[in-house]
Image (cartoon, rainbow, N blue to C red; front, side, top):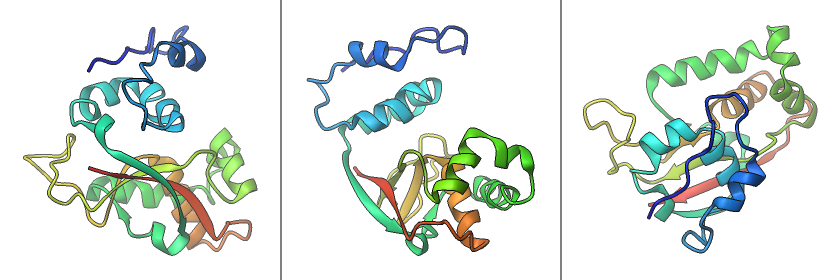
Length: 175
């Protein structure tokens, strides 16, 4: 089933999320969380429409869960991206620009993310739409959306950041 494109998603005068939400066919996708609609579909429209929508993500089952910091370390993605994320997480404690960004400020102050990340659970037999040569999803948890948030959580955990909460909301998807 078709879904609406985000209007003017080139960054100039992009339609508001409320405008987009008013055009979303919610009756066609009753199990798709509004939080993911905002933080994944709307905010990452070009990537979502090119890779994830064709991969059938609107038919996945979604559940919000609480994950400990230790459980978050089981999340993975491509090796090159994992290396970048480790750098970003440590850089949060070394770079004032990261600390002063809206996300850095929020996470350092609140000890968690402003929105849950999205992972795909136990999908090692599923081909990753962005992978190379039929590369499959990581197990047990493939990170789908929230790479910077996850990197910052990992960095806060590794660096023993005192305000870090013991648990964080995570969207867990299943094919």
